[in-house]
Length: 213
Image 1 (tube, rainbow, N blue to C red):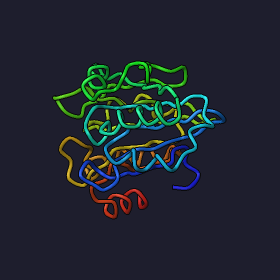
Image 2: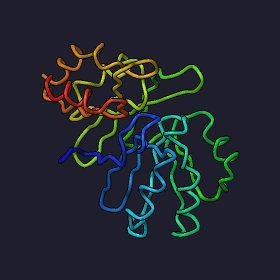
Image 3: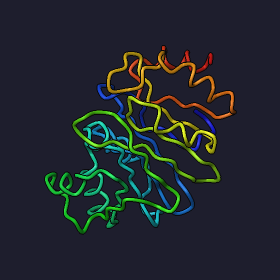
Image 4: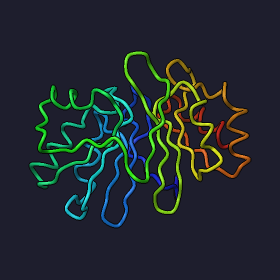
């Protein structure tokens, strides 16, 4: 995935070895997208957190493979680097989630928007609220679905983006079944938009389909 705006820390589905999470760096900021239970071990030796003026963690929803090590990361940044984390989310239970995981409020700020980011409500599961987003960064505009079983809420933004990061599954259920939306993906690719699959339950199957669109 060279030359993409986002770099993945992992792109496995919920029961995989490396939770779906990505990051992008600017001159003095780090953006991490989702912070599942494997992410703390992925990042603690990867970044020199001292060099960032702001550390932002975007959380799409509160399933364990997307927020399971959020508290650990916040506490690590607070106690080891003496840095406050910006948690960027629309999740309605985020503050409660951090409280019950023992995260002291002085270690983080919760923000529900950024100047260059717009959250998009999507359908994933009836048990919690889930969001994708559109983000303008490093001269590119990216669309990121988060976990979703529906494409419709993202289609109005397709014509204005450079890269489309999309939750794709071989089996469907609470995620987009790749075979069911192949025609939609072909139409998107024809526009010159790069399609980047993520949260994959069968990487070989899905990546071959996307490569041959």
